[in-house]
Amino acid sequence: MNPESAQRRELFFLTLPDSTGRRSMMAVDFAPGETPTVGRPRHLFAFDPKLQSLFCTPVRCFSVSADGKRFFCLQSVPAAPLPPVTHINLIQNWFEELKTKVPAGGT
Image (cartoon, rainbow, N blue to C red; front, side, top):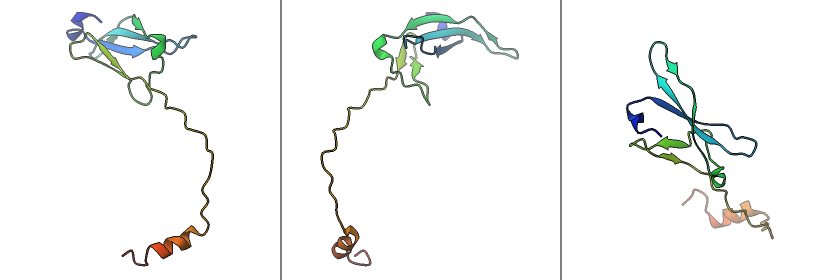
C-alpha cells in the first residue's frame, strides 16, 4: 500500500478466485465529486494459498490499518468433524415421566 494513501482516496477490493482458487487484493484511485473519477485497478498482493478460505460473505473480510500500511483479513477455520453417531437414547412416554417429575402449575 502506498504511504500517501492517507492523503489519497483509494478503494480496495478482492478479485474473484482464479482457476487455482487464488485471490488478490487490488486498489484503485478514487476522486469523489459530482462526476466521480475512478482510476485503473492495481494489483497489490496475492493471498498465500493457505489463506484461501477468506470469509467474505455476507460481510467485508478485510480492513485497512489506521496508519494505512497493513491489511487485516478474516479467515474462516473449518470446524472439526463431528464424531459419528454410535448410539441413540430412546425415551418412551417422556411426557408422562415429565408430568411425574414437575408438578402442575410449575411450582
